[in-house]
Length: 105
Image 1 (tube, one colour):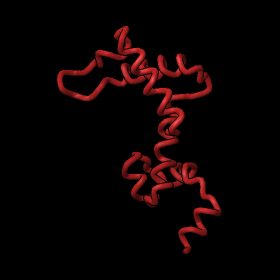
Image 2 (cartoon, rainbow, N blue to C red):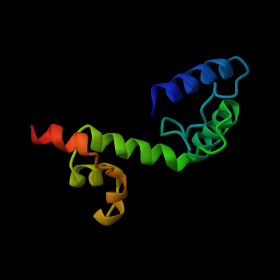
Image 3 (cartoon, rainbow, N blue to C red):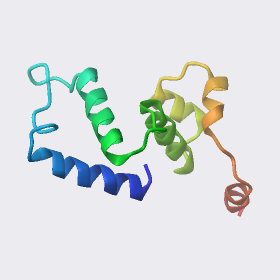
């Protein structure tokens, strides 16, 4: 997530806490947040930020791309992302010549 988007989300989340829109997460006792709540919160923030072309799946793509940028290999990223086929995961690698040169030293 870019610092710009992170800043927007933080600001909107702070603003929303006053009216309760994001104040009470819908949890199953002490379990994880429900998918529906996360999805609704994302949609609410996306609309408030005026980013109609941003989709929830874009966040997954961004996270996986960042793991590659941090130097994790395809097997490690696959274990984190849950991709079973490496061919599907390759679409996130975005190899850049500058990065390859830097790795070669």
